[in-house]
Figure 1 (spheres, rainbow, N blue to C red):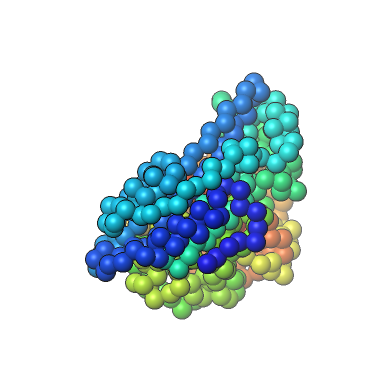
Figure 2: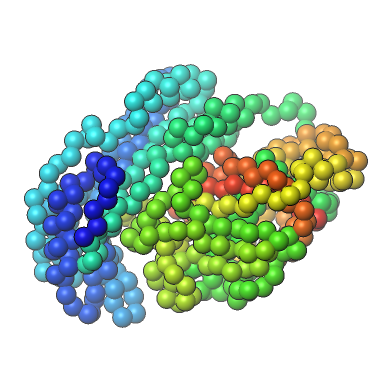
Length: 426
């Protein structure tokens, strides 16, 4: 029976032991009990007027596996009666032991957080604190899902922009200053149809690889053939001999977890090795189809089933100087901040939403850029990454909540400066 050594205030561990014992006795092959997922959430919002709104939620879901499909039943509340009801859909009513009710006071932000959030909100931003406590119970025991507390800072209307970071991150104050830094008064947009080299710096290359590789190797897209990278395992995608790792153990980045939402211990998975595609990100279901280990089954919340999702994309430093990459560029663009990106699975084209950057002429930054979009084919962009990669791996605080099929999850990235030889302005 798994008993975590860390403090786990959200659940009564003796109660979890009893639930796991009860689940061990669930028999039957049609359907087969898969897992019981329980979750508690805390969200605190501090508004610019110093008002405070606190929301505590809890619920659970039981999953069952038929020969050709999965079934799930979810509900609010995690009382013994509520949990027994979830499991009773396909089995005799679970004999859930009495639960010691944990005090809501045990589920609070760090001391002093409210005061610091009020001070920050006074600068015209919304400040939110997110924390999730979860556990997965299977027939072989239970396992805690450990994720970091997160801070989201969002500019109030009419301004736009937000950041997401791990609570207490040492760079948070610096990132807030960058978020609140007003855009240039005069900006320039390159003409539509312009094709030129683009340098991605200040962590923006992490957003680029998040879309071009991270999402495209999620197991459901690979298994269905909807990814432009499906079937390309082992192929050399880039002349840049970069390594790209999806690493949920990077506790300083928002997508961190040590166990996924299916109870699978989750370690780093290499997606690119020296530019070659070598990894797929799978939950339990797609792992069987793709023939790789599971460990990336993630839930938006207990009401929805886990699906394959990336965590934190990390690229180690190269040997090039970011300043030299810019100095060697006669004419092009440098992107310092991306607002996001998407990939059309039909055309395999990526669209990158540039938020800030500069025009480059003869190796020097010139006119600041206004918001506009860049595009290119996924395979072509990857093939066009210059072999010289910067020595400046940088987290991207703008990546934040990642949407897939409209479902948000926290993710992170850290990547150095990269040059793509050709992108087109939309």
